[in-house]
Image (cartoon, rainbow, N blue to C red; front, side, top):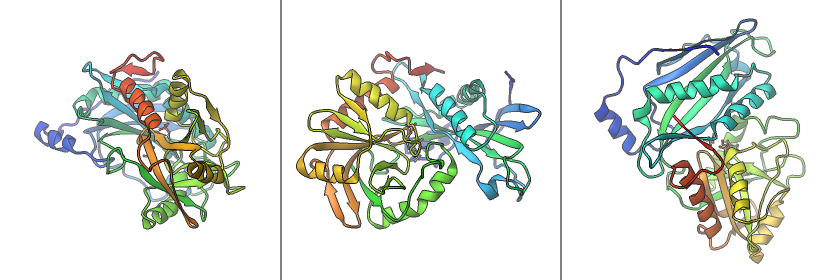
Length: 359
Ligand code: PLP
Ligand code: COI
């Protein structure tokens, strides 16, 4: 494996300024003193791995990513645990998904050990930036883009991998409270054969117009229907979705190639099954959801993801009307699963799956 050069920031943020920034970081607005960069060139492979002061990246206007959006990213968190150690949650799964996304976008895959090495090196130099109060954490954003200066339409021959880190609180500004979703019937997020299962920037760009509509409609997030039948629930703009039934069982849309294989989704399936619940991965239609909420068969629905953790869904709004799930509040199954997950992440209970690694 290639070695990382460490270039410390000669002008880091002062301790007093950092404390002030960590007090109320919000989501994705505050950044640490350093970043990692690793370069790739066809024929040479990955080279020049370095931790360096966080700074703007100069770019030629003909850099391929600016034109054809050949870009992928990941999202994972470092937790300040109750034992005083810093813990990473299932980073190996993010490393694998980053490789899968690279393949889908015809990019050179970053070896998993370099992905994991970049995280260890960055967190080591920016340790003081991991917040410790409440459910705060250090959100890591690894990304990779086509850095070749070339306007032809073909996979780039050069890539830049970058890792930045951002201390965060809750993704939704209201903290943990039920959100309202907007059912997008005008726009699709992903189609069969498309890029829905890859974590590429283009998926999010395609969803911004629907997200803007959701905000206009007084909603927090978009829930997307499948692109073919316009009936099956795919996922939210940045989260997977689970349905909880009156008999205590759960269902979540199956990995159909159009939705992101969420690591939180996978963890929730495991935790719920350990609680003795039946969890099925299957198609769920918008009609089943609406009718189930009305009849009381569906008692809770929640969204899940690294940024969102588990977030209850209280209401669903569509052009033809709105429905409420349960009493519109946070249900007990959502609360209990959420608690189990964060207890593992913060080291409050035993991690029997070895999901956590200490940095
Ligand atoms: N779906 C989408 C579209 C996402 O952006 C995310 C967030 O990463 C998720 C689902 C949840 O994935 P994970 O649990 O791996 O964070
Ligand atoms: C994440 O949860 O890490 C994501 O990438 C989702 C995004 C909405 C912040």
